[in-house]
Image 1 (cartoon, rainbow, N blue to C red):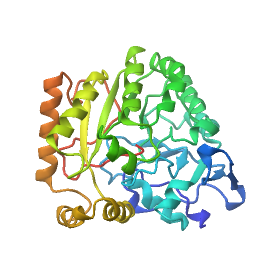
Image 2 (tube, rainbow, N blue to C red):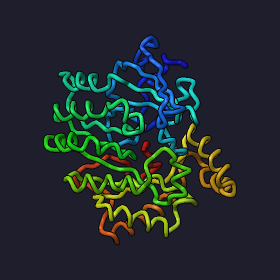
Image 3 (cartoon, rainbow, N blue to C red):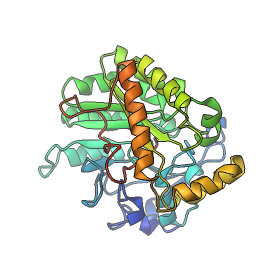
Image 4 (cartoon, rainbow, N blue to C red):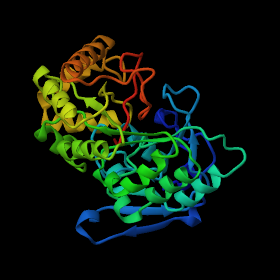
Length: 346
């Protein structure tokens, strides 16, 4: 591995590659495996990072400036995950390697607390879950998020979390404490409710209905929670009946907003997704090649059609997209903007 290449990643634009000096020295890496069913086949690389608050590049379309990512790589194993490219910086495989070689920044809570206490820090909003999911399976063992949330709470620093993980409910009390002193935005990613599609395209994630249970629980405890309906997968999850079923389920969960984002396929993710597609749905390969012939994003006409359908359904079921003036949730690009960015974990 090229540990010297593990630099601050360009969140929201992983294709840009590392932009800063290495976050830690190779001598600080400890590699572990655990012979338990939930972690079998997974290798953890524990490191002591030198920095944990990452600045989003100015060229990025992300509507936030700072992120915190305690993990790199993700056991959710979503075949479309845009962050796969970042593993190539370490000479790691962007397919199975991304799913099973997990970098853990074990000192993330203490480092964040120190950086928040710096006189140079101005208290800007910090987004989490924008690269890989901070509530992926590894969090159950390493428990980095309680310390991270506690640091943000103690400094009354606004933050948001995007997740596909039900483990966030473990930290419900901390989230409530933080929400009492600062702006907290939570959003859960649910792109579809089709269980057959879920089992193959997001094999390491909780089922969609379990994620919507997270929305219900947070709402019941006074924490507003939106849903990022992402990704909407062309020809597999975009049938009007599927969109209706998904929006209906989101509405029933008590979500305060729904924001659809169409699948996009950047380098690293594109190759892995197309391999999956060829294995599971070979008849769709040519259609995808045509739909994504111009690059990573589906044509604007297709994006606008999906956005319109979802917003119409959301209005029918009594919810809507996040609008200016509403309480802030996880900040995401407007779905009709040029080349919207799909977030992960998700």
